[in-house]
Image (tube, rainbow, N blue to C red; front, top):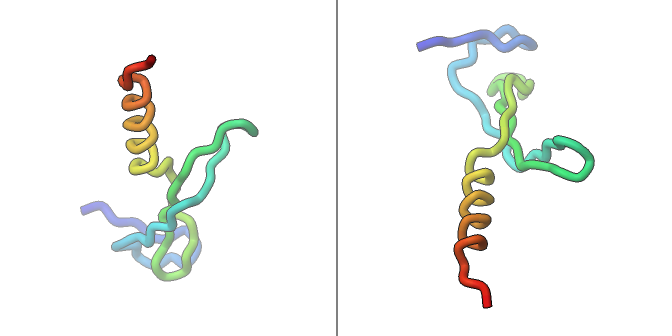
Length: 71
């Protein structure tokens, strides 16, 4: 299993703390829910990404809305 050291505290990172509900901006009119991955020793952000659960829910909601009969 690949493991690395935290760039801040230099401790071996064997697990991550997930900090959810961060807002990432693509441009001023569009934001996405994101998550940060934190070092468990010093809470330094070692990675970030769009929250896959929020993306999945948004996709499902849009599909349901488009498939819903109109009229």
